[in-house]
Image (cartoon, rainbow, N blue to C red; front, side, top):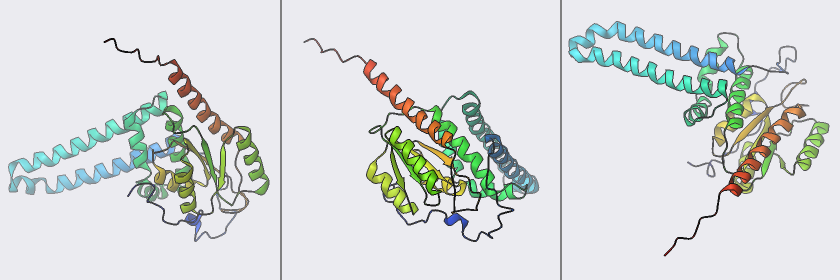
Length: 278
């Protein structure tokens, strides 16, 4: 199913259904480094590797009894699994540390959103909340988005925002969108947000939401369109009176604006094709 067909309704903020309403324990102002998710991602791999080694160790003699090569095949599979992870993790780390984009890192990041629930389940045993881990993953995604340059459809930037934002903050966001000549849309549901993307066909998207909705939204969009997520602050709890840091929004806009201008300059510098002599 392609992106245009994936329009199942999803209310923004549905991830917070079941919240106990405890403001004191609510994480209103989250700011986590990229290394948090990278560390938990590595821990998840280490756990799977340890379990695999334990299983192979327990059944090794039986495998050899069935066929002499089965034991070597099992060990080889573990070695390939380890080497594959080393390459994937290394490419992602290289892109983040040296700010050098590569396709393997981008493909890996896209799949990280799909395995996020599993990594989140593991992180909860270490006292790391789903929101803190989600913030770190969005930061990884944003970093890769800022580093890569891609030609755009029409140069328009679309800012998607939820309805839970404070009214004064919404007016400030609208003013900044007008200043940079960008499009703004306040989406009440996930389906309407996706429909707006299909209709507007933006060159880039700035998504404003909580960590949970950003993880889901970025996973839906994937890398079809460049996306930078701006997480909101929630002093009154989720889905009420939220606001964003306008400096983060301005930085996201300028990242895309600079990219578009660079692409235009590159296109202008390409010499016209010389007519072939007959």
